[in-house]
Length: 296
Length: 261
Image 1 (tube, rainbow over the protein chains, first blue to last red):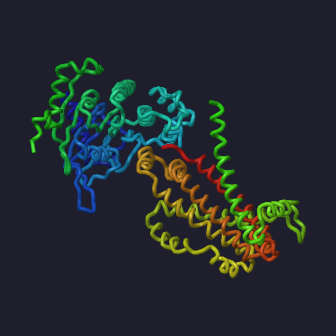
Image 2 (image 1 turned 90 degrees about the vertical axis):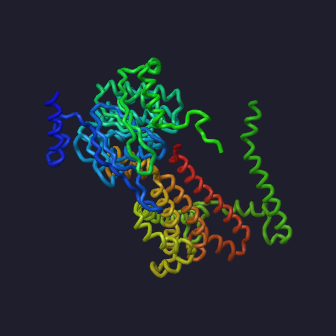
Image 3 (image 1 turned 180 degrees about the horizontal axis):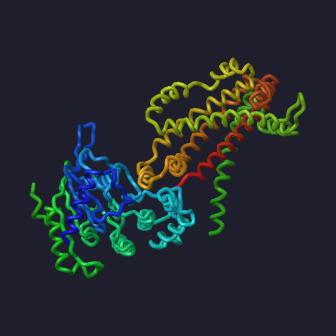
């Protein structure tokens, strides 16, 4: 145990001092998947400089599911953007698989908030084009097999020839998830993936997502932005609660020590679940009844 | 039930007939008021039948109306074709670079409102050949709508679509073929549709200036100089119908390549 930690420390220091030798190809004995160090993100706006998130540090282990939760505009998506490489931090650094993030890469699969399927391509083509772009060392036959496998995994194979416009919101999101899984990234970044779905579809999707993660031996690290407390608890190992922006910081990180596989129906009766739920509610909401709202 | 559906489908034809009847009535009235200086519909119909006899006749001094029509269409085709081949790439470059947009856009905005006919003498000076000058004029007027619409389409690609390309490692070429082109194609087709409409309008005026074989020259020479108002009206109807067909072709293309988001 001690030696493991020690090696981790040594490798970490090595990674920081000698980044040249530190590529993805080298097998890393440590299990750190994402290492965020003192991230600050500021934007120039016509009203001056706006700081979205300030001095955030967070380490995520390989295979961990972590939710970022907070009110709208608290910078959760911005923080996520620094991991995906879509947002450049003004300060600090993000290491993904021990490599400094400078731009988006196919080691990170993104599921966007509004599905972001290409409307002119069929479901099949939407996934195929992405596989074709992201995976270089496979024949087109192998790529086609990958597309088929991933579409079957989300039960959309019979809809493969439809255009995104012909699908329901839940189906679109399943295509988007299949697309992210198809390039076999070590990290999945989900930006409010189920935000636009109705509660019933959402519930099914949670279980489906965990099933996909399980099928993959729980090796993928998942970071999810959400503002749904139940969703965050059901899916995550840890929930990162953020303060309100501007200059948002991490308010608290709540561990979810519930055993897996989790059952939607049973989990809500688990006393541990109720405690965590209460804690998160208290962290995020300060008005619980009409008495909490000051009268005019 | 069945009956009412078939009646409904006949409705547009019925309205069309009403429209034709109203125009015909006004036409008949004008003919009456001008004491057939403007020929009435039935007189025009006789001329129409004369004009469309042997449409493809292509003798040195007698050309059928079809031959003239093809000649006009050929000029439009060449001018519009070359214009589009230049306008689409330019539009794409303008749309993808704010700097190039800033450089080219003011020039486009100055040249776009210029009547295409103003380019005719310039073409004549350049090519010393009047049919070539009318092709040049078509070329110029086909540029602007296509360029403007293409650049708009390219610059309006939603961030969501761009993000897909970024996140999944699309090469520049793949991004161009799989995201930029499909997204801007409906805009490009809108530009082409506007351009062909203008080109068809302008060719008639151009041929009046340039002479030679074509519908415009037919209107001027055989209609006005030949003293046959009926021929002018026949030509107007033919020009209108051909313009409508050209527009419908591009409308169908637009429909084919548009997509539901």
